[in-house]
Length: 119
Length: 107
Image 1: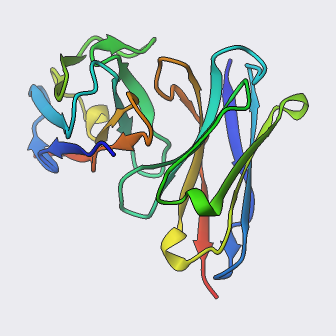
Image 2 (image 1 turned 45 degrees about the horizontal axis):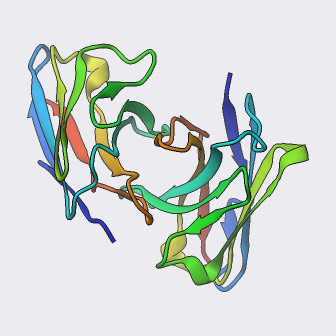
């Protein structure tokens, strides 16, 4: 079955760079049509889509955060990495990674990881 | 960018009730609309895709409809486990966007 799990620091300081890793199983990111995305949710607030990477290395970013985000994949390790630069307290949120296939929405989600930005 | 607006933002209902949540897109998205259920401290769970198709394993008490800009999620015969926050999401065009959520509470 498909599973995803996020990992990374729980606390980062303002201006630092956040690096999150999504480790997945049950599918391959070399399979045509498959993608992995990142979505975040500030405490008590709504979901916000951040970035997506596809099997063919096509990458999509939220325009409002594009200058700060980089998404990469390591197909051999079944991992997707998201980096976000210049972190700010407003970036405090639970960060989720999720699986999708072209033409379909996110169907499998990781459990999420809470990242707090504070000095 | 496409804005997704859900109504109501919160809703009180009783066990056994039938409720409907509305989601409106700021421009047409065909049927590229998904619904998610989220319980406190948990990841969102996919309920419906393509506006009206049920994800595998999701009970038929959940149903979706709509196309273009206006969509609805209906939940029939509410049970205690259905009380949660529901989100719509468009995946017609980037940037993908979610509604602000509808919190369904027990009356």
